[in-house]
Length: 319
Image 1 (cartoon, rainbow, N blue to C red):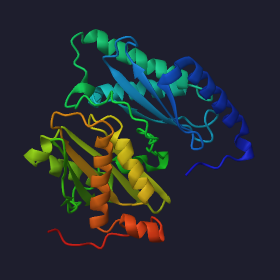
Image 2 (tube, rainbow, N blue to C red; image 1 turned 30 degrees about the vertical axis):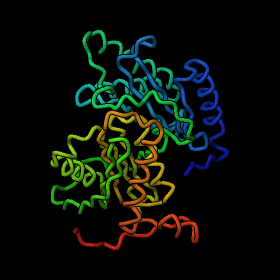
Image 3 (cartoon, rainbow, N blue to C red; image 1 turned 180 degrees about the vertical axis):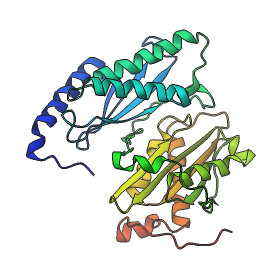
């Protein structure tokens, strides 16, 4: 839900509007408006515009009191960016904010990320593009469906603490496996688990990857939504796992169905034939089917009669 802008935020809102207009002019198609009302944007950043071997997606949410009193909320999506490198880049962005507190800093952030990519690219001349690893080469297929890419991501600074490791005594949630869909030798299979903490999300993924067949899937796309009752907001995220835009579409489906405290993973085994936009249809159909089977949402016929109202899981025992 979009933050309500009060009269006292007028200067910040005007500064945001002017900054976004400037960034759109500077970066053109690289800059993307995800949700203008909620002030959510993203930009694809490359080390080399002519031959983008290393890329990163910087997702940004502008809080009502940015830039006067709060920093942008951000997430960097890059499968190659891990551990010390991610921490180093995050520290650099935080240093920029501290140095320019009260000022518009998105341009400085974007260029800092670009400088980081250039430096890494120069230090590894033989860098293999991680985003091409384990991909089906379908990312270039045109798709005109008006569904957001990773745009469904909603972050909240008050929920950051929930990403920290939870107590190790948490139990692994029961994992359900749905019926597969096969089309032109590609197979899609959904998996579902009830989750109430990010720690459980991690546990479910680790458990699934213990299965050699699932671990060998070309892509394991997932999305989850956790309702934080004390904050009256959702903690949610998604992962493409190389199937560009699939994670965001899956999360978008969970939002449309208004499900909560659940995680859905869709495994795809690529069969050698490009499916184009049909692959997204199969991913979402798999997810919808298992959500219906496990009682998280009504079937299509029931939804048409009563509206898309969420059903709470009945706590069925693992088969």
